[in-house]
Image (cartoon, rainbow, N blue to C red; front, side, top):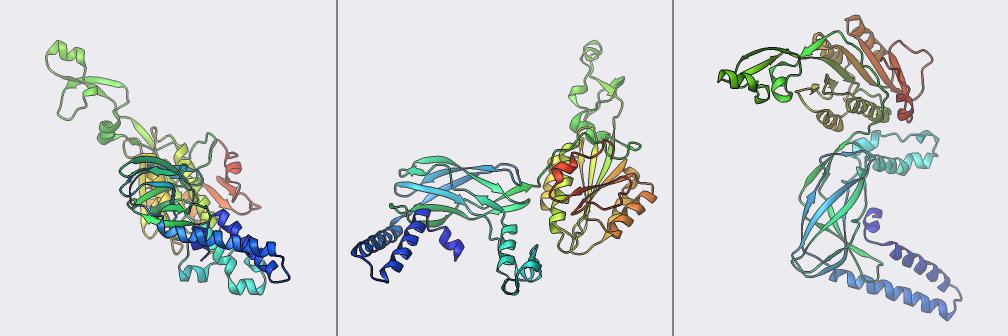
Length: 431
C-alpha cells in the first residue's frame, strides 16, 4: 500500500493531506469559522484533483536505448525515443521502475537482519524491520523520473533521458516503464504502465582501484597459437620469408618480395607466449556472510579490470551449481566477458571445497600461478590453500573478512569488509 500511494501522491498532495488532518483535528473542538473554511477549501481542492485524474491519459510508442553495461553504484543514463499516437500530451514524465524487491517466503523465514538480536521481542516477532532490510537489500536500482517533461502533439516525436543508479550487480529486467500523469493542481498523479519493450540491463560489480601488483607465477607460459594470431596478429620477432598459403593474414604480406618475385610472399614470425593466470573465486559464504561474498566478487572484478589481458590470459574458476571456467585474454575473449560472468554469479548452496580443488588441479599444468579471492576465513579455506600449494601451484590469496586475524599466513592478504578501497591499495607489489 505504501508503494502504491507513494507513486500516486505527489509531495504537494502529501502536504494537502497533512493540512487536512490537522484542520480536521482542530474542527473537532470549538473551532472558529476560519478553520471550517480552510478545511472545506482543502477538501474541495483534493476532490477536484481526484476528479481530474481519469481524464489524463496517453497512447505512446516508446523505444529504449540502453548502454551495453552499467556499474553498481554509478548512475547510468537511459535514452527513450517517444512517438505520440494519441491526442496532445503535456506535463508528463517517464519513470523506470525496478523489479519487485519483495523476498520469497522461504528467504524471508530464514533471513536474519544484522543487529536483530538487539531489537525488542515485539520487533523480532513482527519482523517488520527484517522485511524492510530485505526489500532494501534486494532493490535493484534507485529510479529517477525523466529529466524533462513530455510535450507532444499528435504524431510528434521526442527523445528524453532518464537516470537510474544501480544498487547491486546482476542482470536486471526492465519491464515496468511508467508514465506519470499529474493532475493540473499537482496534488496527485496517474502511474500508467506503458510498453517500452522488455529489456535487460547488465549491472557489473563495483570495482576498486588497485596498485601495480604482480600476480603469482612467472614460470609457465601459453603459446598464442593460430587462433590468437588470426585474431590479434603475431607479435614475435621476424624469422623468415615463405610462400603465401590460404588463410594467411594480408597484414603479413611482404610487398617488396612480391614485387620482385611476382608471387605473394609472407613474413614468418616466431610465435608469442603469454602467461596464464588462474583467478579462483570462493562462492561458499557461510550463513550471514552474504555481504562478504558480494565484496569478494567486487575484489575479483577489480583484478579483472586491472590486469592487462593483452599480455596474458586469465582463467576465472568457481563453483556455482556446477564447475565453471571462463577464459579471457589475448585472442580468446575480452575482460568484459569475465565481468559479465561475475555480474551474474550466485553463491553455491553448499560448500564444495574439494570440487574446487579438483577443478584447479585439472588446469594446474597450464597455469603460471593462481590468485584466490575468499569470502571469509575458515579452516576449510586454509586447507584448500595448503593443498594447492603442496601440489606445486604457486598461489596467493585475498581474504575479505570482518576483522583482521591475529596470525597472518604467508602470501595471504586480508582486506576488511567495508574498507576494500583502502586496504586494496596497501597490497604489496608481489602477491
